[in-house]
Amino acid sequence: MDTKESKTPEEEKEHVMGQRIPEDYDEAEPQRQPEAKKPPTGMHRLLPVAVILVLVAGLAFHFLGR
Image (tube, rainbow, N blue to C red):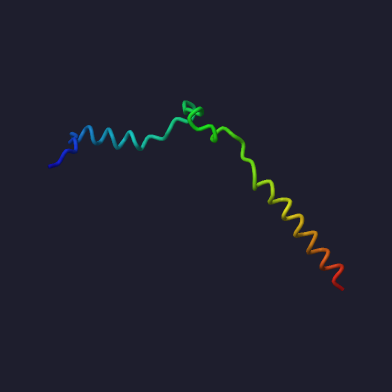
C-alpha cells in the first residue's frame, strides 16, 4: 500500500523551485551554527612557519654541505 502523499504538478513545481532558491545568508540563524561566525584557527597558521623552516633547512644544507 502506497502511503506517500501525492502532489499536484503545481505543488511539485513549487517544491522543486523552493529547493533551487539559494539560502538568504543575511537572515541565516548563526546561533544554530556558531562555527560559521568564528574566524578560522588552527593548521592554516602552521603553513608559513613550515615553509620558512624548509627554506632555512635547504639553505643550510646547501651552504654547509660543501
